[in-house]
Amino acid sequence: MKPLPLKGRTWNPYTIPDVIDPGGVRCIKVYIPDSLQWLQIFAAVMDTMCHWKNYELLGDTSAAQCAALMRSIMQQYNTFVGCDECPPSTIIEEMEYQMSVCEQLRFQNGKLQGLCCGEWSDISGQPAQGWTAGPTGTGSTPPTSGACENYNAVITGNGYWYAPFTVNTGDTLVISEALGATYNPANGGWYCPDGSLFFGGACLASTLIAAGNPMPAVLSGKLIAKIGATYYDVYGGTFTVPAGITAQGIQFQFNYASIATSSGTVNFKVQFCNQSVSSWNKFLDFRLSPQGFAADTTGNVSGTPATWSASVGWVFGDVLRAGPEYFRSVVIKRSGITPFNGTQMDVLLSLTKGAYFGGGAEYGLQARATAGATNYDMISILNPSIANGNNQTKSGSLAAPATNELKLTLTAATSGPGNTLTGNAIIAGLTIYGTGVNPF
Image (cartoon, rainbow, N blue to C red):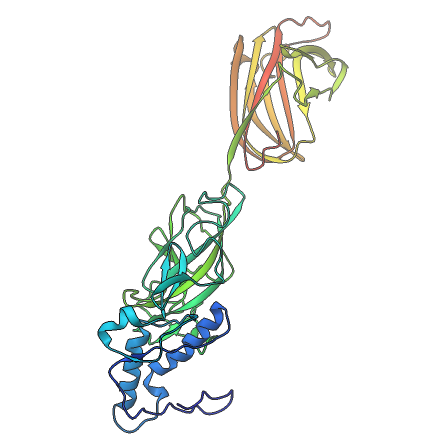
């Protein structure tokens, strides 16, 4: 048989054997470098004998007969493994193929195995956990919000790989370490996972697309994914799950019009990053401690706007402001909070109202989240609308991104000159709701 040409030289076709079909196969022992990539290169070289154009043309069907014979063998035994022992070369009857041929492959319990001399054994160089659907090192639990996990996968040309996680809008996927190739009869060649042409152990540029493919504008043979009823081009860079997807499964396959007759195997790794935003809430019990809050004296001329009392919470104080006007209220603030995305506040309070000098135009309760110079008033209740009562909860919600300060104001009474304040106000607790980072 003639040698393969060097780069830049004209292809030397294989010589037609004197007897094209001797009526059996021969088992031989071949040494190659010990890696899966060298195994793929060797298989690619063997694949060149499966195409009639690589044989000398004698003006008859000899080239086609040679290619068909090799193709029938390669379709059954299209990858090779080395074995320490091999029976002497011998002609084997076709009916004895399955038991006698020493080079066969299979996936068993997530591991690629070779059958050598009647014994299946794992091929070296594979991940310790095998090419399974489970993530490396941490079992099968999907990553928590904001975390990433790697999954090893194996997929055949005519099969699917179903990810052991669901995806949501904003999640990201990165495919890497994709090794192997697939063959599709309708396309007439072997293709790398990125859709390039697999030949001679290398991935060569391809422009082949087909209208009947799941993704007609994407290269045939490329690894793609299906989420819901839609196919996506996910291989090559970071893929971000688009808008409108919630808790959907994801299915990987190859971009062929029909995968039913496809063959070959590809191993790849998927990095899945869960970008979904987790919700949380935190109750700050002022009866136990001040919880990082302090009385806010902003705008006061004199007086104390609040006092913390153990087992009670923040208790009212009387202050004088410009006007002059007196206020009986609890005014507390916590600054310097690690920015978080606030969504709701629930205030636990007790209130006995006195007279309101402003005639009802002043706040009875205000709960404010501040992000820099932007204020978000989650609760704004004017004094006529808030009732007297002990241990009552008032709630309000509003998106407050990057909140770094909280301020609570509960007013029992106001008066003009002379300070005729009456009533009682206590803030006993605050429940904060948010998404993402929880700084409390």
